[in-house]
Structure formats: structure tokens, C-alpha cells
Length: 320
Image 1 (cartoon, rainbow, N blue to C red):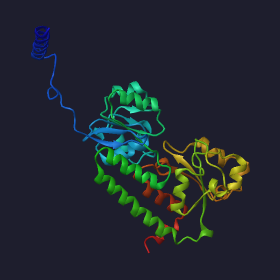
Image 2: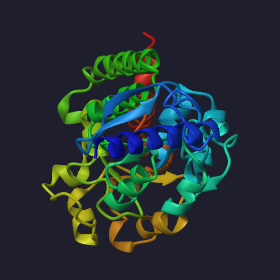
Image 3: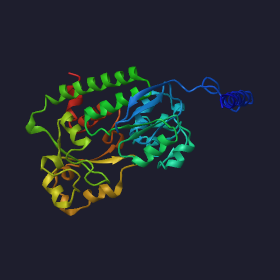
Image 4: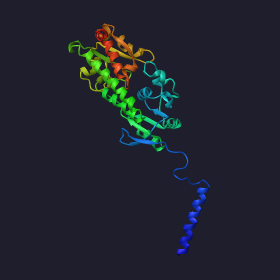
């Protein structure tokens, strides 16, 4: 029995040596080396191993495209959202146009075909897509969508950390903090009774209402967000009676390939709205969507631009 067992062990050793000699078994140190990884925490609670220096990055939202283009060179991106290439939609549009392919959606098979070494996804992307990418061995990190100014600052530093650009993340954080200080300095000269009420309308009804990112931005710009001021709950469409109750001083229409004429006409041509201060004083204003949907490192400068639109006298006061 012992001789039989010894023979079988010897035979197995010889077989392994033979297979290794034929190249059918590789030692762990042979072949392509695995890129050095570090671990970051994904918003969904998963610790994700990411490349130390990712070269093929894909963001699954235009907001994260803009953040990435402020942190790294365009050639490190393997795809770009279509909206990111519009000049009035993204303040990094010129750099975005250097990236191919341009995408309007993110089906799983298309993402995989791009062979990214890192995917950064917003928290509204389907869990099935996230798990599918991870199952294919693609490092996929979920980042929370910022719904406050502080949340946007965190987004910028989080994305910077994920790709190993912490110094640049800190740079943008400090930049935004300086801009917030300037907003406060300017705003303190405006008495509460002189502050204006603004309505930001969007094709996505209720998107800019109570509890939205724009709602939080209004606090820094020393303006009142019209839906919040009348106590409208979050995500409620702005019907005719509600707009009349808001009585806005300004109405902002987002523009990214020219102003949305249909959206503007809903207010400008409606007989019921003709006595609103915004209509009467010709204050229905197209603003670059990049200012109004600004979930990125440009949020401070965007708020300053909007504030100067509402309070043009501050342009002079800021240089006194």
C-alpha cells in the first residue's frame, strides 16, 4: 500500500513538472503583472481596489466628466457624455471634445467594450450595471450625487482621491472656499428686504425646487428660491397657480444649445403671467446650463455669475 501511495505522489510531481515545462501552468510571478492597487470606499459600502494610476477612466455622468477634466488630461478618458461637449453645458467642453467616443447612454456591453480600468458611477446608476462591471473585473466606484454645495465639494475631492489626484482635489476645495467667502462678502451688503426671488425652470419639472442643489445654492447667493419661499414640497411641478403664488423677480431658463424656446414661451407668452415682476421687468433670463447644473469644481464661480446677474450693482461694489 505504501509503495502504491509513493508511486502516485511521484507520478503527480512528474506530471506537474511536465505541465510547467510545457507552459500550461504559470507561477504567480510569471506573465503580466497586476497593476498596483489601493482601496477606496464606494458609496454602496464596498471597498474597491483601484489602479494606482488609472489610464482608461470612464465616468457615467456628465457631472463627473467635468470634474475629471479638471483633474487629468482628456486622453485618460475612454468616453464622454454628449452633454459634456456642449459649450454652455460644461465649462470643460473644449477639453471634452477631445475625448471619443461621445455617449448618450451607458449600456453594460458598451462600457465593457471600452475596456476601462476604472469606472466612476453616480449613485442613481442601476445596481445591476454596477455588479455586472465588477463581475467582469472592472474597478467600479459609486459616488454620491451632491445635492448641496458642501456635497459638491465632497464630490470633487472624492473623485480626485479615487484617481489618485488628492493635491488637485485640495486645490479645488480651497478655490471654492475662497469663492464662498466672496459670495458672503458681497451678500452681506444686501438687506433681507431687498433680496430677490428667483425661479429656475427646467424641462425636468420640480428638479430645481425645495431641497434641490439649486435651492441650496440660493442661500449662498443671497436670493430666495421661489418654490421654497412659498413652502412647496420637493419635486413638485410648477403649475400656473403655483408660479403666480411664487411671484418671482427673475426667471432663469437653462441654455446649452441656445435657450429652450418652448420652455421660455411657457412663461413669456402666457397671459396669466404678464403681471409677474420677472415678465414686467424683462427679467426672464437665459443662463448657461453650466451655471445652473453645476455639480463640479466650477460651482463657486457659477454662483458668483448668477449673483451678479441678479444684483448687477455688486459688480461695482466688489471693486470699491
